[in-house]
Amino acid sequence: MTALTVRLPDEKHRRLKALAKSRGTPLNRLIDEMTTVMLAEFDAETRFLARSARGSGQEIKGLQLLLKAMADR
Image (cartoon, rainbow, N blue to C red; front, top):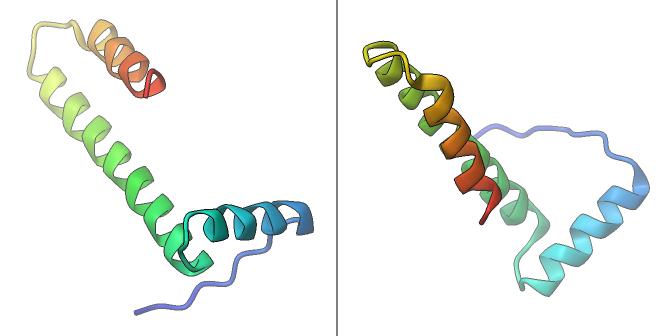
């Protein structure tokens, strides 16, 4: 496992600590969960773009639908 130092404004750190506390989880686990979600979204987008490159040229429309679906969560 790797340790990572992240510099954040004090206010953002305070808010993240409050969020972690409200979810009953340590701040480290909250950050780990957030990065997992972001990486999963990146992987899905990457797979989609790779598949759409083999498709019928509708990748922009499909990507717009994917982004809309992610925003509606």
